[in-house]
Amino acid sequence: MELKRKKRLGDILIDGGAITPEQLSQGLAKQKETGHKLGVTLVETGITTEEAIANALSNQLGYEIINLNDIELDEQIKHIVDEKILMKYGVLPFEIPADNPNILKVAMSDPMDLAAIDDLSIITNLTVEPYVSTPKAISMALDRYYGQNELESQLDEYTRGKEQDELDETDDMYSEDVNNSPIVQLVKTMIESAVRKRSSDIHIEPMERQVRIRYRIDGTLYEQKTYSPRILPALVARIKIIGGMDIAEKRKPQDGRITQIVDRMEYDIRVSVLPTVYGEKIVMRLTSKTALTKDKKDLGLNPEELKVFDHIISNPHGILLVTGPTGSGKSTTLYTALSELNSSEVNIITVEDPVEANIDGINQVQTNNKANLTFASALRSILRQDPDIIMIGEIRDGETAGIAVQASITGHLVVSTLHTNSAASTITRLADMGIEPYLIADSTVGIIAQRLVRRLCPTCKEEYEPDEEEKEILGLAPDDHTKIFRPKGCKFCDETGYKGRIGVYEIMEVTHDLKNVIARGGNADEIKEQALKEGMNTLRMSATRYVMEGITSVTEMKKVSFDT
Image 1: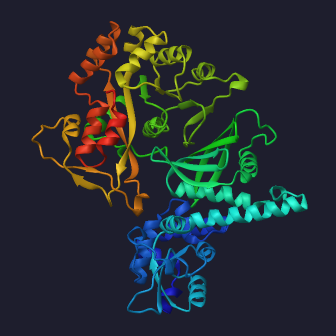
Image 2 (image 1 turned 120 degrees about the vertical axis):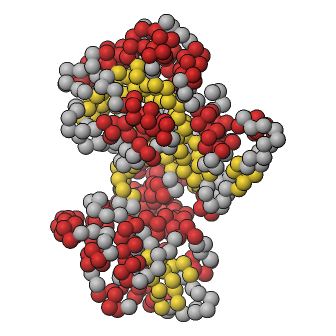
């Protein structure tokens, strides 16, 4: 084993085919700038992936890869090493074999880390047997088993410090070592925990006798913890400081922005503070800088829908609208479309409120109401910038809609969002904004209505035969014995029965016949009827397909297609 450990990581990765010698040279040069470990640098620069490194280490050194999702730590293992040591080295002990109690099996992203192995051996008085895993998998497992303990210990430390401060008449929020103060660490750990649980929002809610913390995971809020109201002032103050807000102002709503790196990925956090009767309520919306720019194949479109999507965005001019309620994935679809269209031959300009993700090669404008830089005023200036493609974050009023229509008619491709329930009703919404039907027909090339449904957890979903009501909803005959799936709950999905979400789409390409229906002022039902004749799938039809394929449940289907 000693010989294996002496081999350098770069040589192992080259021998394992994870990188080339040229890429190793790039990584080593970058490592000198950052001071990070080589493996971290190679992943951060996009040269290779954590999974490729793990496979190379396993193949070249003979260590087995461990899937941490397949294990459950018993109480003895959980307490065998202090969690601070585990987090320091990024390792996870997971088993002491019954047939060899002198061995401690440990998941490591770097099985050649002698310092970690030696420290664990000394602490446990056991022989460490390394297994290979990725840094991300280890971080998520550590958070699952020890994250709550860390939050509670920091809370206890803050409470003790607060009691001492009251005696000393000082405040640890403003101590010299502010970065290590308990409340700073509490906020940092809370954000990290939310990210690792795949949360989109953190809710900090003051109540009469407690402060409630909830995370929105896959569109649903789950309570995580309740704290004493005594921590609220310091918690709010810390979030306001890092969010660039006024900590002295407690009577008015405020908005701020935080950037934090979690597991080597940068997250943009939009903060909203709202005064309530028991104190200030905070909502933090978490967005990965890379999550909004997916490959179009990852959106959840079936092959036919993908074909229509490609055809719509290939139009040289016209309006493409993505519609749906807040949190339905509209921004992701828009950014994906822009990424597809992005090339050195076209000038793409966006006007957004706020800019949610930065894309290389695209000129992005942030609205500023204080400077009178609204969607409408920005659009007028953008049209003098020789654009080929314009993205408007949201069409909110008739003025913005009118400029967008004129821009599309004069040779620009305009993509934007609108809050409507279906593709057909989007046309009537534009008419309500004062746009003439013939202009809507002339300018619109496609409308995508969408929702997000929760995916059933693949580990625990259970098969069953639907009841009569469910068969009717799915369009099945009473004597049809087709089986579908429903949620159950297990440790991998935090007992929710669901893990992740997928898009449900209603894509309406505006064809010649549809233009005729729109131009003569057809209502939403007439527009929908014509689109169905031309092969459009409604949200209900798309959601039904996911139920029949075992991707989601009837309950989720009913949520997104109740009125379609």
